[in-house]
Image (cartoon, rainbow, N blue to C red):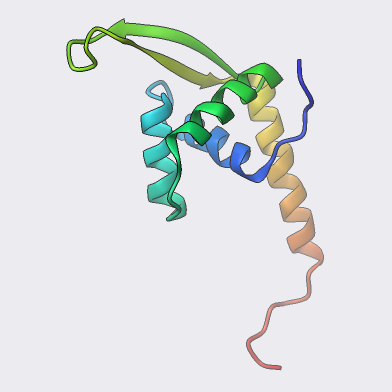
Length: 109
C-alpha cells in the first residue's frame, strides 16, 4: 500500500465514487466533480487519481460488462473500501475541528 496522505483532488474523487455508489467509473466521477464542485476536470487526472487511490487502498475496482455503446470495451468500476470511508471520515473530522476553533466569521471589519 502506497502512502496514506489524501490530497484535495483525491478527496474529491473519493467523495464522488462514494456518492455514485456502484456506478463509479472515470466519466461519471468526472461529471460528479464538475457538477458538485463547479470545477472543470481533466479525464486523465481522474484516471490517475482513481488508480492512485486504489494503490493506496482507498478504492477497489472490478471490470464491468462490455457494451456496444463503448465499442465492446469494458468499464472499470470503482467502489470505496472500508479504509477509504475511514479516511474520508477522518478528513471530515479534521476539517471540522479547525472550523470549531475559528472565531465567528464576520463581514464587518
